[in-house]
Image (cartoon, rainbow, N blue to C red; front, side, top):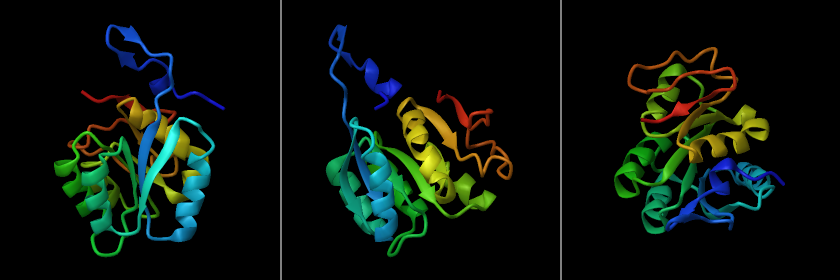
Length: 173
């Protein structure tokens, strides 16, 4: 089992904790099959814990406000409230929760709009191989963009995302 670098040295008081930190996550996905797939990836690492699963955008906003998870994995094509609008609301209600979009949407406009509210975007086609790397990057306050999206997505001047060879950008300022 691999230890995430963000969990290795979490500061506690004047020292450094040797106890691994558990990451509390909210998964927002309307497809039960995809929720099970995401859960199977997340469960491979003992430092990650799924706090709650939501099936629509309104439930995502409610649970984010209530639970204040460390990380929210958020689909875009959701019933009742789309993922981008849910992210706008979550950002106001739970500003410390980090958002990682996980979606089949891949148009440049949609991805760039999502990155205004989230630190990363994983295309569902890349989830099996990139989701855990994306989670690690996001928790280190870095941006992440799926490898299949980088050739098609030009950096938006407002998104503050850079595209490196390993698809993880530098720390946010």
